[in-house]
Amino acid sequence: MATKNLSNGNSNNHEEETALEHIIKSLETPTMKCEGTHFDSQVPHTFVIFGASGDLAKKKIYPTLWWLFRDNLLPKPTKFCGYARSKLSVAELRAKCHQYMKVQPHEQAKYEEFWQLNSYQAGSYDQRADFVAFRDHLDRLDCSCSCNRLFYLALPPSVFEQVTVNIKEICLSQSGWNRVIIEKPFGRDDVSSKKLSDHLASLFLEEQLYRIDHYLGKEMVQNLMTIRFANKILNSTWNRENIASVVITFKEPFGTQGRGGYFDEFGIIRDVMQNHLLQILSLVAMEKPCSCQPDDIRDEKVKVLKSIAPLTLDDMVLGQYVGNPEGKGEAREGYLDDPTVSKDSNTPTYAVGALHINNERWEGVPFILRCGKALNERKAEVRIQYRDVPGDIFEGNSKRNELVIRVQPGEALYFKMMTKSPGITFDIEETELDLTYEHRYKDSYLPDAYERLILDVFCGSQMHFVRTDELREAWRIFTPVLHEIERSKVKPIPYVFGSRGPKEADLMKAENNFKYYGSYKWHGKK
Ligand code: BG6
Image 1 (cartoon, protein in one colour):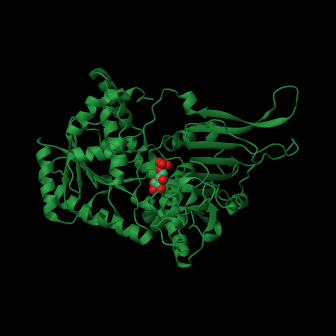
Image 2: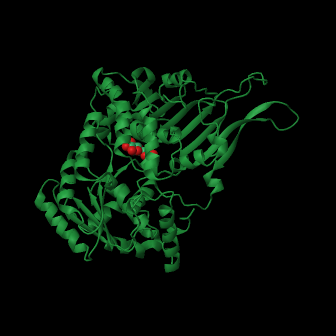
Image 3: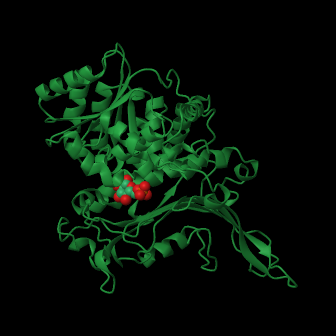
């Protein structure tokens, strides 16, 4: 990995240059480069954070900016400018962020340098005059003839429209490029999402919009294209003739952790399935793009999404967690015990849904998306289960092959296969070919998803960002069932905090051609 030794913070100029050059080069190679853009390492940049006093900013955005700065990955000079309603000094902002910044003792000088480049301005989100004052502040910072601006919207959806209008009318750089980074929720259904997309399209070009789905910044999700299209052995089995079913899983061992108010409005389908899991599905199922250009890839993702029929309740199991009286701390509380959640809420905290892709490669292969909170473990993975070997000669003892792409924790790719049991025997048993990153790439530094994505925005690469038409297709697939759940007040099945989720979900997987043997345990990650 190129970034292996970047985090020591005391590199000399030569090392800095080498590291920076390498990253820029890799982002600018024909494989990743976005037409007409490049990394302007000489031009001043300003990174603006709207909602700078909020949770996302302090837990994710400021820490990410600090790590990128620490590792000399940002163009010089880059300045950071916070804006929010609360009156704060930079020192107060720094104090709020500090516990998330992971600063090592030897990085102290660099850390001071980072905060020297920061400023903060308080203002409302709807008053023109406040934005004019902010623009004047930004202009004073860029005392050069050209400057690029990045606007990060770490904001609640309620102020989204006003802020984007004010950015467009008042805050844009007149002398360089402008890019806008936005976070989900991108609406609640097809209609509200279209309204937001139309609003953004009336202000900005698609090339200026960077919709973050942070799962697209994860190592193993970014690896999917290489796994599929750079390996003859896999690519030729990647179809309905060989694959029985695909399961894409997201599990978290904690509940809503005080975010109940937000979560109750959205639920697990909108929070995880419609975006993170569907994005993974599209990379697993799409046809090979004609190049690695971002729009060639996104064209293929859209194409496969278009072949998916809307999800129906018949193809789903929904769950909601209840407290475990024998559990500790948070585990004793059920979803409905959260004071910010309404007592009769039917919002699912667990969902499994089987999607069907109507094309020549995948007809008849269920893609099972499974996600939930308050479960028995933390895990995100893709599991490709192959068909039974025809013409069995092992008396039914042979089990299906599985290729598992483990996204987190502990990045890995392993292939479950049958082997003869070693020794004087002719028995057969399950084993694996194992590419566990912790073993194979011991010294590699795998950056956080946000580090990769924010750097991509500086470089102008939209490969790992969601295009408007991808979003439209995602909502087309999920809106009918979401409305149905709300309209018919469908009751989710209760499951105990810390369990595997509702038993009905296992049944549903079995009905969708996924065989669970329970006889194998992968030892890659404790
Ligand atoms: C977010 C969801 O998008 O992803 C959260 O809103 C979820 O509910 C989170 O916890 C999971 O992200 P990660 O990177 O920790 O797997």
